[in-house]
Length: 198
Image (tube, rainbow, N blue to C red; front, side, top):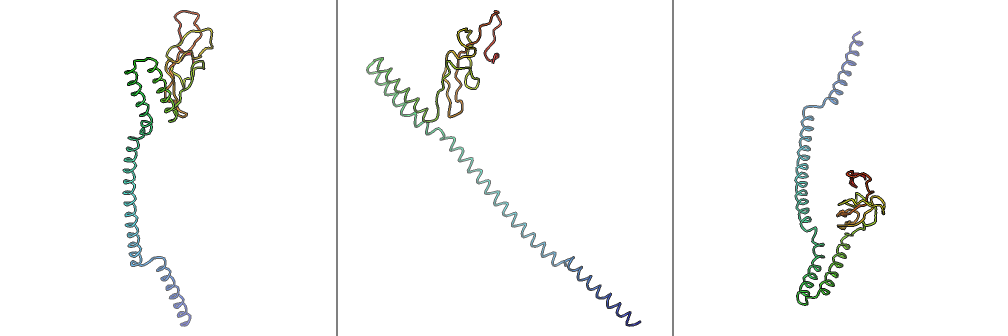
């Protein structure tokens, strides 16, 4: 009986030791927790420092970008203006020559040369005029100045171009101002604008 009780006590002691050992593994000591907390705080400080550095770098990048954009906007038209300077020189020379010779032919020839040079400079920079007269009215390209009742042409055909339209690459730089044909109204006082009809 004694041996039996001793054996049971030994078994109980072994079980208790195993439970304590498991508890220690599952529940770390205060020192272990303090070490883990200290490591976590150090990592947190490192991450905060990195975040502050990145924020400062981003602010510097933003400032540089704003400054670069301001300079770019200030000098964006520099190339185009430099291309126009020789045209201005030609115009001034032409005016001087006309003043001295007082010849209409000289003035006309000079102005024609300057106009052609101007057109070539615009084309070199992606700006071209587009034809409108005789074509159908297109709201994306044209502004109607006046609608003219006509029987001899199709409705909404452009009769005349008061101001030339220009494209810059594929974008309309300036709409052409045009006169457009409309069907004559049979009843008086019942005029309809071309915009309303389209």
